[in-house]
Length: 495
Image (cartoon, rainbow, N blue to C red; front, side, top):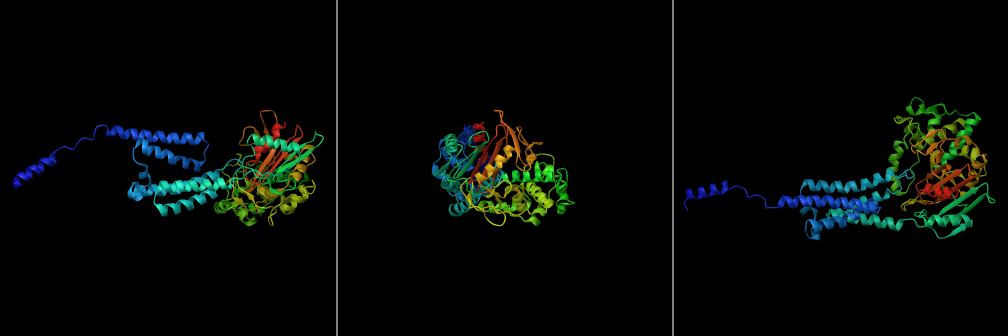
């Protein structure tokens, strides 16, 4: 063939129009996308129906993805386990996706842990995020396979959670009536997640006013009561008002001059005891400390007076006037009344509340541990929470026999600072108002319950009284679960 003929042939081939796409290809791509979206919906719905946590949903994603690969894409499962560098991560968009997944999974665990619920504010399961981060990093460096890495991480965290999960103790002691009540609650599932639990039931109209029992613990077992300390502090604050030492409409800087000139110093004592001062729950430095201490089972409310003053002066009170639960605000209120009384906070509580009521096993945990370590809700061993300036917010330790003395005095009106129980301010719950740190809730069965719950990293507590029916319930747990729910069930069942 001559050069001219070659050129003509080349030109002819170049001028030929592109072949149209294979019939049905766009249709198949659309079906694949629709099927993928459908499987994501199925994954989400199944996770919700099975009440799976985040880690459980990650595990559920593996069979869903396998179904998508075999039933929709019609490709062998082994292709899912190919190295990312020869599949989707061969270019920068894929590499970026890998990095995002490896970061977002532990970040989501941290977010879920920090958010917690109304009574779970101490990032008690953030150790899962730390474990997940380590496992994901190690697995991906070893395998370079994202799916396999996520499965290994989820299985590791799930197995660790299963092994560490608290189980109810077997030993039982105390009053048979209380044990029968606990047995009933166990059949209803309210003791799931508990290990050792001590309970007191008070009924001033009964022949036996106080009944005490426990599972794995007894009436003398000392436990941290966490935020129940706020309610005790509220009694002492109301008593200080009666003594003429403080005024509820006074600025807190009146008693803590170090707060003068700051927005936080303009909050009134009434605003602090009703959580309407606009204070954040914890100071910024304390939260930074919690980010690494909580996953290791360490207490993080260790700020001294200097640090807490600095944290408080930084506040802007942007939510002032709206109910926002604040341990920092509670601590400032407690330290303010101690200053007004010219006592340290532990001495204030001892002389004004614990000793007058004969609560000989109750104290403020500030100079060293007064309890053995407890357990987080997800099974992490937690050291005792020894505090300093934050003590008025959560540092009390007690027993059910001591708290029964407090409950009895509250029911018969002989406790110091009874005015603290009178509700004055709305909260973030429609059926609940607050007094001086005490919640007063009206339930559908007609009961009005005055109560406060508490948690530290390793313990939980509840004290609730039905003033109209002269009844009370106390719950102490060596696991940082929601003792509030169990306490309410015990008290409402006895209504």
